[in-house]
Length: 169
Image (cartoon, rainbow, N blue to C red):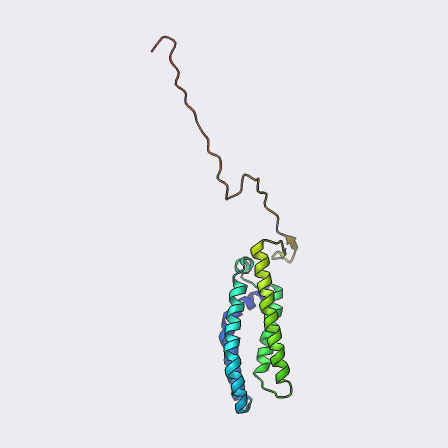
């Protein structure tokens, strides 16, 4: 659970740290001046992509209530972050492969975030996990139940009828 919570807290700082890492990596690893062009093109994409992913992930009710991302989010976003960090190393032997991998995994992370948000918004039952790790399916609500918060409780009505007294008063 702590890994998922750490990813939850890391999402917003990652939007600023990862593009900064691309600039720092370019300086530290002594990449050629043409690599700066790729940094200038990819750093804004990483910033915008990470902010979009953060908004999509944090828009889900389960993420907000648990303050933890899903394992799917942790895997997809974590893989994307590893590939972006690898891009900042600027090793010419595998840099293009890392760039292609970062693009593909970034699209996959975006797609999985969208599908999870869509599934939650539509109310398709997901298999959830409790804090102890036990799996369960969220129980369906009965629309005819009287305890439904959307339906008002019936009010008690008291009817008073006027009657005439038998002796005429």
